[in-house]
Every structure is written in C-alpha cells, then in structure tokens.
Image (tube, rainbow, N blue to C red):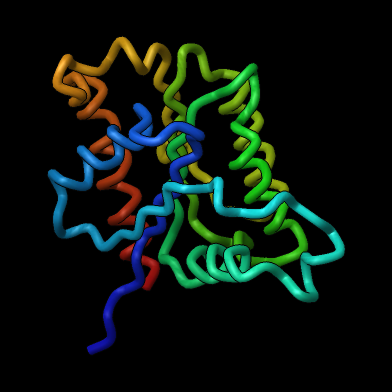
Amino acid sequence: MAASKKILIIIGSATKNSSNQKLMEQVLEKNPNIHFRIYDDLSVLPHFDTSLTDVDTPEEIVKIREYIDNSAGVIISTPEYIFSIPSRLKNLLEWCVSTNVFLDKPVAFITGSASGEKGHEELLLLLKTLGAKTDDKHQLLIKGIKGKLEPDGSVENNTFAKVLELVTDFEQSVSSLK
C-alpha cells in the first residue's frame, strides 16, 4: 500500500519559534495521525529572480516546489507585517508564479497577528492568482495572537479549538480527494 501524501505546513514568520509556529506545533502534537511536513525556514530561499525561474533554478526552490506539488494540500500559518504578508512568504509565492504547483492545490491558511486583516486579504488574493483551491471554512484570522499564548507558550483553549477544527477538517477534506 502506498504511503499517503503529506500536508505541507508553511510557517510564514521570519522569527524562529514564532507564535504561528507554536500554534501549528501544538495542533500537530495533539494530532499525531495527521501526515505532515513543516517547512519553517523561508530564509533559505534566495531572492526571486525571473531569469532563474525555469532554468538553473536554485536547489532550495526546486525542493520547496516539489514539496508543494507532491503534497495532499498546504496549510500556511503566517503573521502580518506592516499590513502585508511577510516578505519571505511573498518571495516563495513569487518563485511559484511561473509554475502550476498551486494550481487546484487545496490550501488552508491562518493569519495570526496583532491585526492581520490586510495580510489575510493579500494572501487570499495571491493564492487565487496562483490557482490554489481555497475555501472560507479553511481560513482563520486570529487577531492579537500574542495575547492568546499562555505563559508556557501554549495557545489558549478557544483559539486552539478553532485552529484544531480548521486543521482537522482540512485534513479530512484533502484525504477524501485521494
């Protein structure tokens, strides 16, 4: 029997051990049956260069494109920086523009930030431009994320329940597509 495809989780934050990363790690820790791969270091991706998008493409770009293409679906958990998505996440999406790795790919996303509204809207627009399949029930805006972390770094129960529901439902929906 072939192994099932994994869900790729992309952490959009530029900060190691960010609120968004802690959020996803906590959800996945409680759901060991979800097959996933976390990609949490967008800093290793070179700056987007149109001359390298199809020829002599950097190895790290080829690798992340393959992770996306070969995944059952993608979950992006990201903050908002200055009313936008983080530049490293935007850089990744730019590297994917000339490909079809996101075309019809199920994508869920969580914006956990102080406000997050503009970044959330921007990410939805970019994903639609790339041809990703997004669904309102697989989108979550968490305002005031830092205030929703307990002193031990865990996510407070109400927020955790919302994220858990999104991830669980997304996993079930992509599993049914096999």
